[in-house]
Amino acid sequence: MGPLLRTVELFYDVLSPYSWLGFEVLCRYQNIWNINLQLRPSLIGGIMKDSGNKPPGLLPRKGQYMANDIKLLRHHFQIPIQFPKDFFSVIIEKGSLSAMRFLTAVSLEHPEMLEKASRELWMRVWSRVSVGLWESSGRTFDDFLTFPRNVFRVMILPSPLPQRIYCPPVTPLSFDEDITQPQSILAAAEKAGMSAEQAQGLLEKISTPKVKNQLKETTEAACRYGAFGLPITVAHVDGQTHMIFGSDRMELLAFLLGEKWMGPVPPAVNARL
Amino acid sequence: MGPLLRTVELFYDVLSPYSWLGFEVLCRYQNIWNINLQLRPSLIGGIMKDSGNKPPGLLPRKGQYMANDIKLLRHHFQIPIQFPKDFFSVIIEKGSLSAMRFLTAVSLEHPEMLEKASRELWMRVWSRVSVGLWESSGRTFDDFLTFPRNVFRVMILPSPLPQRIYCPPVTPLSFDEDITQPQSILAAAEKAGMSAEQAQGLLEKISTPKVKNQLKETTEAACRYGAFGLPITVAHVDGQTHMIFGSDRMELLAFLLGEKWMGPVPPAVNARL
Image: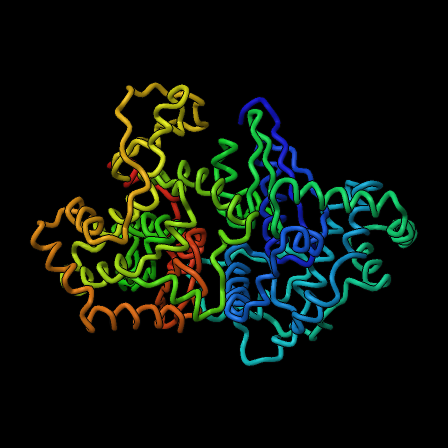
């Protein structure tokens, strides 16, 4: 590690699955690499509009690829991510404005809660969606990964993967959780460790000009860095600024920082799991 | 290494810069991992048309990102890749039909020459394009990487990168090399080690139904695997087929194969450079 703490900003939206992957990898490395990680809640809808880009899922073949890709990356990254049952309704139609305003309020008032609150919103929209798999045939690796309600409970499995692992049967949980309604956001906040009063207080702030403007400004900042989607990671290294798109350039980020890449699950995290 | 040799197919087009990155990484790992690498020359234009996708460079902000991304990946991957001076003319207008038919003829008649011939075509279109940088101020790392005419001559440099490295001055080379004209393809073939007669003989085959149909069939196969761009890597592992898009999923490929990922420049290659 060099003596200088480098700032790494992650611009993300909880609607974006690759944002979640990038987020978890950077959260894992924030105490391993010599970096100051700054989480920047942004609005993916605003970035798509400003750049003229379209969500990849709208091209059928890209959507199909993305579903498979996420299934493979879930194992590789050890993050219990999976496609919403009703992708178009959840991701394209409903959007994330309230959720990202809530996270913006958290970043302003209780930044120490931002990581956990963000994760709990992703858990709602991109994880607890098809637990019915538990009722399907067998106890496969796929089934196993639908279970954890928190990424830090995911087990490390031997490589190559065994096709079947014994897991005790569990009661199926609800699925297709919402992130647009007040009670959904409050539920995520409480799961993240906030008191009901604290969560309610923050929720009331999402319609204030301060919060609205902050989310707008952060989204505009991402656009100025050249974003056409999320996540983007902006690394400030030796007077230079590098913008990296997606969750698959973290090894390149390590290279730019002069830090060691140890895969999406570095040993220190591995030991904690 | 397991006892079973797994087949890994790389579908690529020399117009695609990320195909080049994926190609070099797989060529480097083909003797390290327990794989049988099969190179599949394909036509990116056909895949774009069939999938309804558009080249990323057409969206201005994506094009700008791609130029920066390639500049960073060139260092990280140690491949002397850089943007053509006239991207739209070279990549969008001229296309790669003759070049990819030529590589198809090579794959049918002299498969042992396919790796080198492919590389020499990439060197023309995606590398020897801005050697004028040598005349710019100083001898920077950027300048250094424009020099090598062959990827295996790129030096390993200490990390973090020094800002300036001394290199002796050299005579600027030509730039914006073509891959559409017969003499361009012949020049690449000869650089790859073919005799003039051998190269001429293969060039004559590019208008035969056998070669045309083979390129069409390979491109269609890529589409059946779900391609909406190139490169795609198709791994056949334990009776399952995984399709991976782009050059940034090679660590995931290692995970699927149960092999060790050692970065885009594995130590065995590092020692040879």
